[in-house]
Length: 394
Image (tube, rainbow, N blue to C red; front, side, top):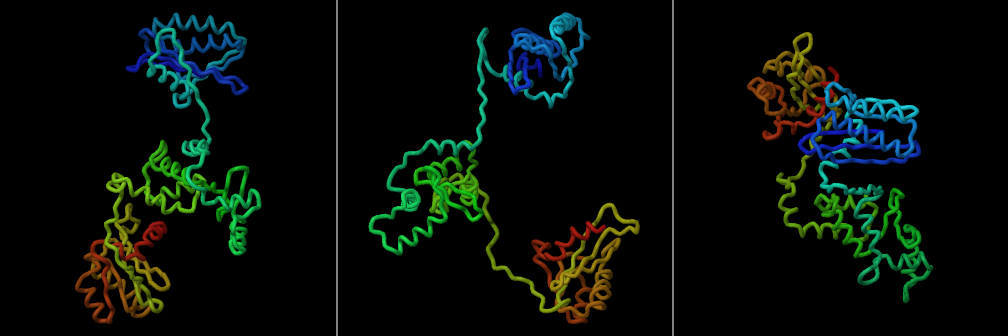
């Protein structure tokens, strides 16, 4: 047995759940018509549950609650003695304290009794049922009357059901119909198509398709999704028809509010230009990682990273600060001396990477110096993509 009682601004209420080993459960809640403290409400809930157990001829009982049922107040002594008298009627009974989060069902019943208006002497029955499918799927199952002309799959269904062709069909049409029928399945009166992943998608007519779109977009579980997301949701539900794409796009376009409040793409469309390196170590991208906290034992807080666009080879060095001279020395020592003169160096717009010393270095060795786009320094993509790996290696 689980019990719970509460007394607050919503009112005084109690909730009890009596569970039997054979999965039988009797939930019960009541609204108290008099002023009670929290501990008094807990005793009321426990007392009601014990009496219910005796009425069902229970002799062995385990009681669970989030209250210790102590009698520190003088008002609780009578409750404590009354519970002791009821306990004597059981052959075996134990009390167990559980946290409030593990007593949610009894707490929900107590809260429900406080929120529902019930007259004195009146009882209210609450039905709880299992719903295995989504609401729009159940609603669709009741719509069996087709409206308008024959559905688009009529000829395929007729061939699978009776082995007959349409009147006046040519040999070429019959051959095509037999080939199409291999991808379909008829189970009773329900028509399915085998998807590429071997799942079965129910084929629907024009009326059912309209009901599905309405329920998925704006029904009980609809969230007014856009056309592409709406189509995916319909496929996940297990339905399909030939004009699915065009139908959902036309349907969504009719909703002005959905179009107004949708996320708009403000980026200017432009062609992408791939950065290709003709041979190894001819094009390098350089970027700085940091500051890194906490710094290492040597006081280093920054990592200067260079990556070759052809081989994706990475060179990295650790420094406490990144100055103009450090960047120039890194290029000479770790790139030019090891891998030869590059043709291009791509860096972001940081001041420590763009300076007079860097310009003189590029002019001296005839290296083409390029900057990434100024509005987005991480356009220097390859070095930035390796920042997470460099951090992890620390």
